[in-house]
Length: 438
Image (cartoon, rainbow, N blue to C red; front, side):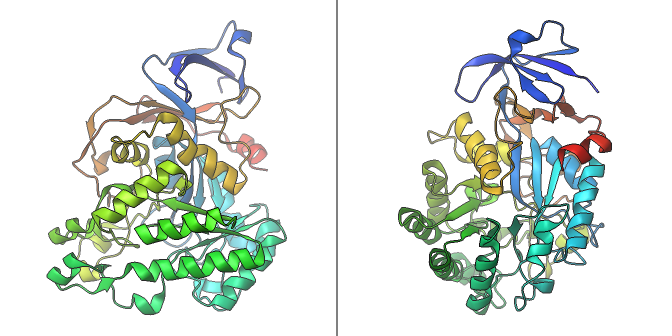
């Protein structure tokens, strides 16, 4: 492993140009490095803290035909992510200390990104009985975020008990806001397009009613709530109101909800079928404004790979979900290009804020002495998205054929270059991974 790397002439998040030194896995004062093992000319590149994804589906154990922790980790590295959180809807469900510890060890062995398991809120994601929240928190994985993502914790009493339980160790409940009775059989956003196409609609109020209930529960309990994949203008308003009231709520938006609308469903291409569904232009505008002003704290990809046969089907039979880690940064920059959104904002919503929310102190900084988790981006590298060239097993990327301007060139995980010049590097050795994940 290279012990010392000097990165010269990168644009830093504050807009200045400077050097970065990586010494034994940590950032160091560049002036202290006189004979680096490797020197990288980063002129024209932007250096940001490594990205942190609060919302991915790595599918293992049980759905290795869709993704594995290894392939998901490789996809993460290619997208500039140095830490990802793996959702609990695996098979078996990650609702015990044993399963989350297995996912954690798989991430250590893969060595391309730091993998943090998300524990299920309820046993089997069934929404009725709390899972082993304390045991998962005390496990080697040190779980702090819990979610039944893919399913809403719709019972208010169960949700209240979950919020009360995790408060004892400053955990967080990440809610998939979807009132199930309002979305039975739903296929797309409820609105003019669904009416024209004759597809059962998914009303915005199904999301907003759960958010309204949950922010009040979080206020009542004094606990932490995170709202997954916000998709409507009304949801943004509710979260803005809750924050103004001092409620401990954070929220995420996906890259695809910042860019795509329900008009694409007219193609009946199942690549555009996702949960929550693509919404209206008005919703997209509100999401962008919420991300810019801080109402929405983070971008989470909701990376959801599926085997081809699960997406290559008629619309009503196709699985919901999109992949997105390898295109996330470029899509966000494209979506926000007509606003005042800057590289510093990208660092805020894709690195600093998610690291702070999830308690990953090793991520989110470029300061000397902190772990050297870093991404280099070329903000002027137009390219056409080709899912076949990606490292994820999933090919269900809705941006296939779209030209994006930015791309990740290099990713450093604890000083180790795991992605370089557009290709995977060597993984960080497992023995070291065990130490930094401890």
